[in-house]
Length: 420
Image (cartoon, rainbow, N blue to C red):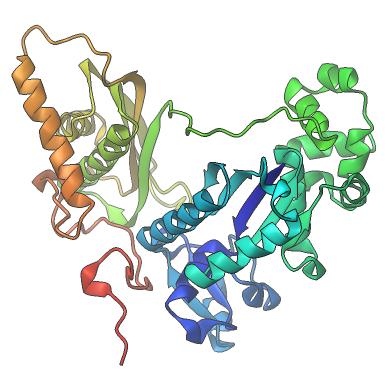
């Protein structure tokens, strides 16, 4: 048996953890540069607010009705997520962190100790009491059925946020009222194709012949059908899959025409990507940089370009990555354009422990460089950070606009909540 634990309106719920006064108030969280809604509570939904609504369109009416708004606070969300996952690790023998607000649990043996519905309730209560974040729990004999159960827990309030699909009859009832588009792995395009042949819900999908599905569609959908029938085809992934590329990009808070500011931006993104690369214990041999103007401003002259810089020796040293990013910027920057976005992408990865040594660089020098990066990363995980490079900029005039951001309650000593 598997359980899928999914945090409810996660970003918005994180904002409520240290703000009990917002318990029943509508909350929305905005995307980078306070552009559009990326998370909202049920109270905000009841006001007619939808995901991806542009903030400038709804701001006046929403705030007039007493709605509360926050800029995205990724440091807070990541830390709260880590705390939730720590609790889940204590509740089951195996855990797969699926996303920042979702995790699959392997419940092998748990049903010998307690009823699985009671396990779901216990899981809810512990996370709400210890962290302050509400969750729903879907339980099923496969990961896909656990996802269906999670959908039922969200859709139907009578479930109290916990659905256990151990029983075959209950599985069938829920499959018959689950739209085809709510099935894990079925996107909009595939949904249209399935609707065209008369498949409207999950139960109808399970009635299709597997060999027909394999020929007409693909093997992935065939596996989904087998999972819906209770056959395990997708096991838990204990270790996260090693990334094949790392991308860091941002839309600027204002249009940028100055090359020095663009150099700062791509240097900062390269340094951030370097941290992620070292966390994966990988090195890369290719760095790509892109810049672009705003495609939605038709009155502006448009320019977008991307260039790749290969490294002679694979690296995860932030200094190498920043140097490569600045070299790339020299080649693609053009004056008199108003740029609104830039980004870097790292690819062609190798394991950092399996490297051919550089003939012209001493092993001792490589050891010093590696330790320097480790030391910087270690400092930046503590309250003594951040340690950054001068080329990343100081004022960062190009950085994202987050005018409505809440304090970093759990990651910054200077922003700890105060009680009186």
